[in-house]
Image 1 (tube, rainbow, N blue to C red):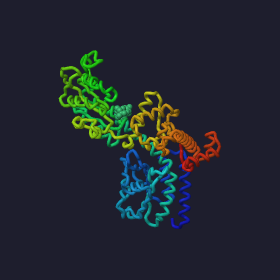
Image 2: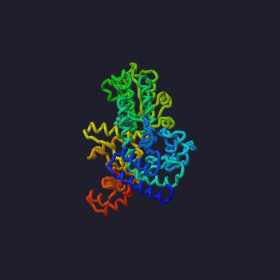
Image 3: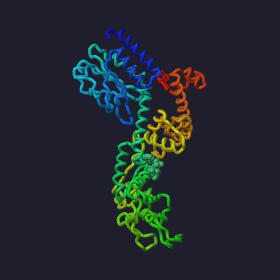
Image 4: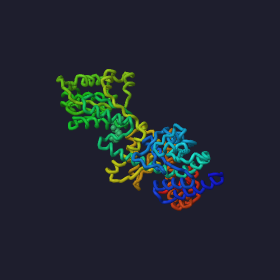
Length: 511
Ligand SMILES: Nc1ncnc2c1ncn2[C@@H]1O[C@H](COP(=O)(O)OP(=O)(O)OP(=O)(O)O)[C@@H](O)[C@H]1O
Ligand SMILES: [Mg+2]
């Protein structure tokens, strides 16, 4: 590329070829490989790499390479690591005039010898889709005579062309991995989770299940406290004995003690027979006291005694009963605050805090949201006899951006609802509940306007999905898309502008 004019001509020819390849029928790998080959032939580039930024792994995965020997192990960079990591983290291109003079250059793919390095320049640009960095495109070329600024600009145009395909590839890769992860974790138990915080929970369950230690499970509503309690029981040597659950918040205060400890006939008005309490029923097994924060102060003393001395009396009965029940307790309240407010005895709180397991809210579990979503879709799909093959990317975006006040339970309900609505084996964004549509449209606050905003957000989301699907099928051709949807080009043009759909993006997308 000696003169400006000739390099522009070369770039133009290369872009035309790339656009043609993207419009072809090839699979992702094949198409991208062919594009890298073209870049090399036409622009003098020596090696090329297309990397994906994987949200589930929080790493950058080198996906397609040209001129680099195949490695058996996949090559990864952490965010911010090496040039590629920097480009993805910052969203900005980087050019290195001579790679031997740059300490950031890692050559993890191991393609360049020492001699090579002094003669090579390296260029890396982010691949962005819908405002997010989805990957990176990097090339190296002879250092001599390189117009780095001009070539970076050219590569950015190439990256824009590749972006829709790279985006789709990344979502597919993430889904595949999540399915594998479910396979791995499934047999271990029913508590699905891969986030560090959830791995810690799994370790804690393992540690404590074999012992008789009292466990206190805390966490917001719907985070899986009940599930973890069962897991502890079913992984313990007591798994064949009963697990008895009592919801302390669900029984009237004056009957709580009789429920937990039982009563003797005549102990109080209405006690017409002897009654066995939950502690006795759980003999040899596990007693699960749910919502312990609701236990009246007076009964807390009695519970403390069972935990410390392993014995109790029925209400109104003199005989002391030995308890051999393993105790698991759960609450969604902050017991420390309850103690400070005088609603919970501090001695009981300390006794319960021997082995606490805290379940983090779903919004803090990162990629686990999609992991759980896939798990529920598979599980419920089998139960309901409906096969859902995937969750589309608009739905995935909504699931990820929502704040999940109802945690895992809310996620489960949202997907069940969407599964009922699904007709083509795919869960689409517009089938998710209104609250999620609101999150995606960035408006969750105004309760008064919520109803109509809900409706509008759903209509917008539905229209956007329909139009985008049609544009993908027609490769961005609005006239054909209109025909496909049985409407006019004017309507499509209006909606495309109104919903800020970038139809040009779909010129290269293959469905
Ligand atoms: N990690 C998980 N893997 C699979 N399923 C889960 C997980 N966490 C929760 N669930 C499911 O989500 C639902 C809600 O969980 P669960 O009832 O255990 O929550 P909770 O913390 O006890 O809620 P609450 O405080 O309202 O009682 C259940 O159907 C449970 O099986
Ligand atoms: Mg519960």
